[in-house]
Length: 298
Ligand SMILES: C[S@@+](CC[C@H](N)C(=O)[O-])C[C@H]1O[C@@H](n2cnc3c(N)ncnc32)[C@H](O)[C@@H]1O
Image (cartoon, rainbow, N blue to C red; front, side, top):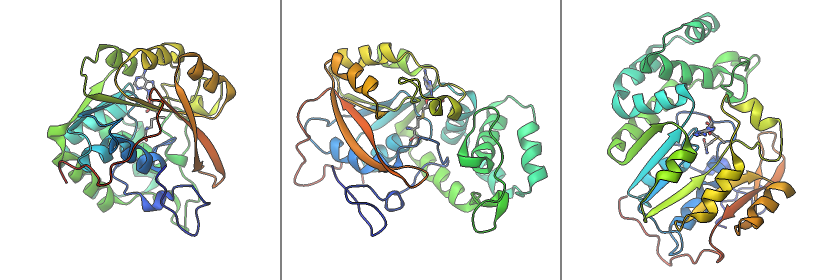
């Protein structure tokens, strides 16, 4: 795999701080650490594609990076969560309103609590609430019951992850790519099953609940996934598939029983522990990397 190292990162582990962060969300279970790996796959003949389908979009970092780097023409991001899907559709259709709201927000605990308690269910209200919930909750967790940041970092307390200008700049940059991004509020497996494009690649990062772990359930309101159907879909499509899962014998066994290929890729967890995750593909060969990066739109 392509690695970006720093003194702080163990050998072979991507240093997340060296990867360009493009998402407005700090997503629990987010795949920023896998960006260099997926981009290197897209530069290879085996995985070259026109459109990326991301059936479990979340913070969308892989789709955003692939489109921004010109490695696919467009991306289809599917998300089941009402708030996350609304945020993406407002960013793609109404981003100036959202940017204005973010820049004018006064980040006090009572104001945060007011936004979270407000009942509006229109797209704008949902989108803003999603950003607030993500930026002011412990670990960025947006699932029901998540608690707000208390001590925070560097004595900044509840505001320790509130960088309004940075978030606004990322949103504006994503809005500039809006012609190449599509958001579907729905079920990623259904969208995957209906996809007929021969030039699509699937990047699949489901909640990690296949091996019965509780963590995947705690992080998202939508955590229950039909993993057996997902593996069936991944094994039957002719399009390239890149899936990520937590390292477990059960998941590796499911992948192999569907004729898929399993690799271990090192990452550093949110608690700074080096660990492996599984990258599961439907292509046997290790990617043959191009001598010069392929980029159609830089
Ligand atoms: C592991 S997270 C994705 C993180 C993303 N790769 C990132 O880097 O930010 C999984 C996401 O899938 C969503 N989800 C769960 N079930 C879904 C389904 N059936 N269809 C679409 N999205 C789903 C969850 O709400 C969550 O946002």
